[in-house]
Image (tube, rainbow, N blue to C red):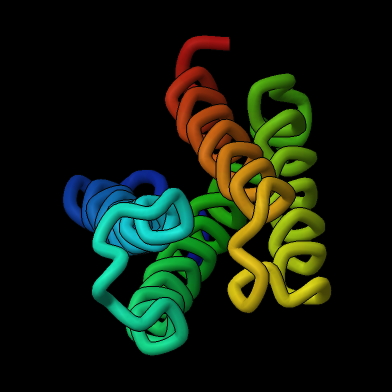
Length: 141
């Protein structure tokens, strides 16, 4: 039996990967919401650049954890997942999230904290919520 087939059939390995995936998502989204609250004016006494440095660093670790565990889960069920519409939509949404993040940082939205920055943060939250929903629907479609 190969390594990836063993992951999906193991009584502990695949659930452990799912736990790591969820922990990574929590680190990512929790810190993005924290930064979004600051962009919307909450915690105005906090320096936005310092908060962003901390929260985006932790969000990056969370994304890395979610991506690594997600790739391992994908590799163990690739054929099944490639035909799953919820999985396909999740991947498209992840690309949209990356584009939105590139736009946010490329225009220095943290330096501006304007209406466009707030729109970008709302878009980010909506995209990530849709990613979460698709992730859950993968098991049911």
